[in-house]
Image (cartoon, rainbow, N blue to C red; front, side, top):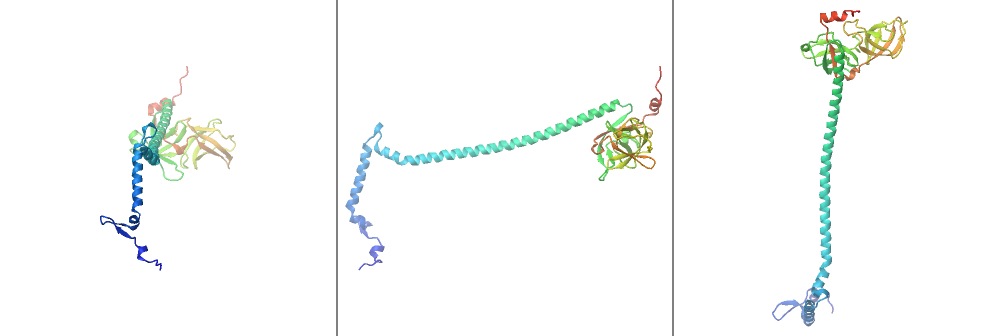
Length: 306
């Protein structure tokens, strides 16, 4: 009776060959067949070693080439793909390095351009200041603005020249564009300048066209008011205002500002003035020195008539 759990089915049957070596029973049972297969294979191998094809290529070599050619082609393709990938990665890395270097050079060039532009602008500004100084009939001392007084609407600045440069209080501070203010406090190496927009300042002024005189006072918010001009005077918007020289601080004829608004008051007109100088962007200024007694006499002396 058939038993599926028989030891004959669950374990291979072994047999002993002539030397006493255990071999599977199927090989032992069909030993002649396997011997024939081995002999035929050896005969074919020998024939392939002897038979030659075109160009005197032995058949066994032809078979070997045909058998290993796909693997060789695959290996060649894989090697070529790996080489191309490595070359691409290397080129990308070099391109990234070059891009980074170029970006650094571009930033450095932009900084250099900005620095040269600033130097050129500063040189042009100093040249204009020097030309204006040379054209003046009075002595001036150039100074640089180093600070402003604290507050949202600052009405005072500090300059880098003081008593060691011969400065004193009540000296006019100007630029080529016009009047800035006057010195109110002097220190050894610096000085404080009160701007004309401060309510406590005062500048003797003259309307350039109508020749009407008044006192310029600071009104805050970057504007000034021209006071003590009667209502019956005819004042037009846009009229320039210059210093009158009557305050003994500012030389006569310097630009102060322009009329931007005119209205009538009880007795005097309400005249709003925009300063000629942008007081929020001051960098370099000129301090007007007081002339000596002989120089003052020479300035006050009337010209000779021939």
